[in-house]
Length: 391
Image (cartoon, rainbow, N blue to C red):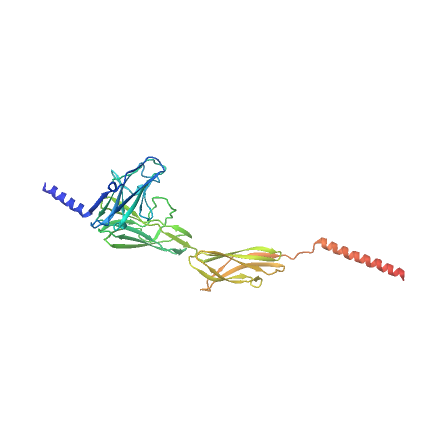
């Protein structure tokens, strides 16, 4: 009997060390949202003020929901704190035994009046979902964990991208956790490209104390140019409700740029039989401003053959030049761009061949000329005969 009493006392001490304050949403005017058809959404607004509560700890919102099907559907619960962006909670993020619970840290609501908009939405594969008024908000002695993925804005193709994972505990208790740095996206909201880690670890098991942040690094090496949505990281830990909880990081983007900052190509349009309009299409491939000069060749044939060039990051521009009157012959036109900051950085365009053919005199003109000459000869002959008879 004494052992049972000691166990009960120990349990109550543990409970009171975690629990500080709780209030069911029903006491705040929230009524259960029960939807019985597919592709429908309903919301309610709850207002509360925790600023006058003297208990120490951190705010956790516990949402109790029920879905007819947990997986393979677009049903979700969402919450919006004041004017912040809504947060989506998919069924996969609920911890389900007898009932399904999602625990959300709300550190920003402790010091002011808060308007909380709660919604539940059914997808196309189910027609029944419920957000219960047994949901509650509380203040607890708890770790408050966040995980953030950091990536460089851009790299050159062939380089490695240095990635970092930052895990922060802004709560009041130590957390033991496991984090996987590259995780498959649970929901295909955006196109995720997976990457192999070429250096560094892909996961970590660690402890994070209250007020502590830990940072971990790894490297990836994309093999194509383009803009990538990188996979998110996840962490798993045991929360104060003795549940396995998952927290996911942000999605980051990485631009993989072509090794050459500038690319240039030219096209031509005939203006007449022996002159051309040449247009250079110049693109700045990097997110860095470019200053340089463009040269049209041959320089002795193209007017305004040298032009100053300024390109904003990741922009495109057309530069036009004209040829002089071209004599018969075979011509080859191209463009060259030279970087003002470093003359060794030169970028070459494609080349365009353009023949100017010497035109033969048409037969009709020759025939007409022969006719004129013959007529003149006849006229001279007649005139000569007449003149001779007079004498």
